[in-house]
Length: 507
Image (cartoon, one colour):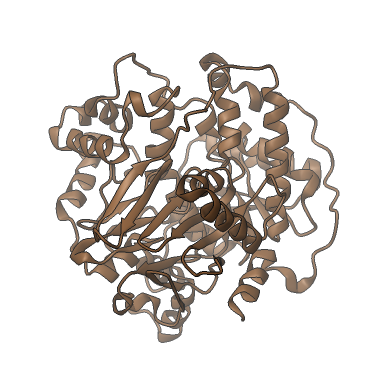
């Protein structure tokens, strides 16, 4: 079924929502970025999708540039102003060099990509959990970096990696019933890789190549040593982060019966404005536990006085607007589209979703632990299970990952590698995909995407983290009634971030 011309025209505005592409060769901007705002900053020519917020600061001598793309939040300054945060990032770059810049942006919350541009180098740093995905290529002596693998592939004329796609498809036989995502550093295209959380990408204009290097854990990190103040610090950080995230605009909280989303609701509730709501997916084919999520989320929302919306999980009809948008954004290999379609078709535009999936980074996900070092086979077992770990071609993917992310006992500080592997790999290849799907119609933010919050949670011993002690303590608190501080004006649906985007871009 062909897509109507009007639908295709609209899809150009929604595809690659909140995305960007940058290249050292201006002539290689992809056709998908036609009509996007263009800007030359140092070595790079950028193109920004209509809804992308970007702040840029340049020093007096124009030698150094700081670029922040997305929605950074500075807890120390209690600010969501991207221009102010970019100025602080730039100051840290000029005064303390790249390491100072890295440390400053590493402790920002929100959802963003930070780029430092110097006379001979470009450095790209993702947010804490790399939730605004970053892909790159340096083939043919051209450096390209962007938010979506399709944009980078289009700009670099990359070939699809059929071997990687075949491996992904074969998982359905080796590990039936699971959800399938690329592993290690593979993508659907040859020579295009993601930037991993806790790592940075450095491109040199003299060498004309990029290096992917680990910057975290920092040397002075202290984890695994509880002080007795963990809950008060956890609550303070989560509360402050939620307060600032709610300032972006209208908020919708994805809510289930679980403690993760329930904790977000408790932390955000005092700061929600009129027009806020909660929502839950309904998949009629799911088990009874899934329906309990709906019943409990509805009960909680009713009790506190917040509207609750149930949206129906389901794949798109061919030829619909969503089908055109989704297919354009993910062309070579499409992720599951049921949840993305439900959000796009059944929720408002331009609200800010608070998603709680990253709480597991600070608790415990991998419970089958071993004292053995993080070998390629061991990581394959953790991610794929025992059947796949017997297959050498899948083990090879994690040989590449260990080398690429410098994932070795001597480089990961005091962390148990099971925790860091979940943070850097499973979240980066799986959980980070979901926010990009939501970005097609609105903007996804994640209250647990905070390095300081995760470090606080990781100070607790394994048993308490596995028992989700901090979440339980917060979840045990009584929920007050919803009492909005203010009523949002009718024309404020796009929120503060979109207004800032128009100001910064001169629109």
